[in-house]
Image (cartoon, rainbow over all chains, first blue to last red):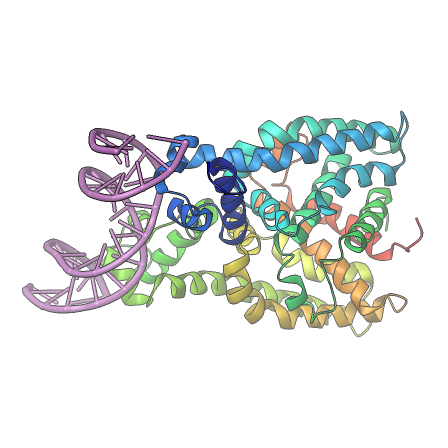
Length: 203
Length: 203
DNA sequence: GTCTATAGGTTGATAGAC
DNA sequence: GTCTATCAACCTATAGAC
């Protein structure tokens, strides 16, 4: 019996999550991961079959709880949620994430077209997106579905961007924007997106 | 004298731009590029010194004209541009881009933290961002600089997202959103962002 | 300027001992 | 389950002939 806190499989997932977030999926080699996790190189191919399967496992471990939380918050808002409640249910679980470690990973997923489309969007995100589009339609009956889908895309893009670049935002804003204050970021994005969703064509 | 339409250097830049956009900077090898460009492997190290220099050259070739056009549009709007004019000057040159070939590349740049920060943002984007922040402050005197920087970040994120994922948006929206209709996309994003910029804290 | 050839290093994945 | 050792393929970059 070893005195290690976590088992090998978890150690690999943790290390992979960290490195994928820092350097991206392609740049991170299995050797980088096993070194960081302090496990043997062959262990990754024993517990997971391939690098692609490992990527899928890393993503699923973080995305599924977030989507679960999204569904819970949307359900908790009752049968007729307000625009702000819907946006909170969609954004809060991913932005107000406990660890700053998860943010870069999520950002990488959303910013990498190939991995994203195949692994995440088609499997994890599409049902959630449909559920939220329906909620938006109910809250904004004057907006047609196409318009809602566009504005949801814009909102998801803003979210993805502050996730992906959370480390660099202070550098780019002369230290004026602090992305580590998650509740403040969330409040600002909800305000911004809610106004965007309520915009009328004529400006 | 060869019958080739373009010289080797341009052929390399074109091929690199295409492949970087499709597969990302790290995944694309110099061999991929020279094969696509139908030039010799050593040519890339002759005309550019290294892969990093090639990436910088590919980025600069597209980003500089866009930023130039942004400055021109902002100046053309006069000394007191409206919010919509500022947003148009910022978004139009990058979104209403002629070719659909450029969109993935721009998306990749904005989605890759490492290359982005070093190559693009610090060199190309920071002066433009400062110029536009000043314009926003003049148009929205009630908004403090931090708030403007956050909302500009959200807007840039939405822009980056539709650039990076322009190929996949129809797939994710059941064909309802068509990102190839650039003027329509631009109009929608300007409407969305303008409302977001005008939002008041209390919702 | 363009080519071939190759050095020197890294990668993902596996075979087989323990 | 964990290890060592290794394969075959790939990479960037360069040296040197033409």
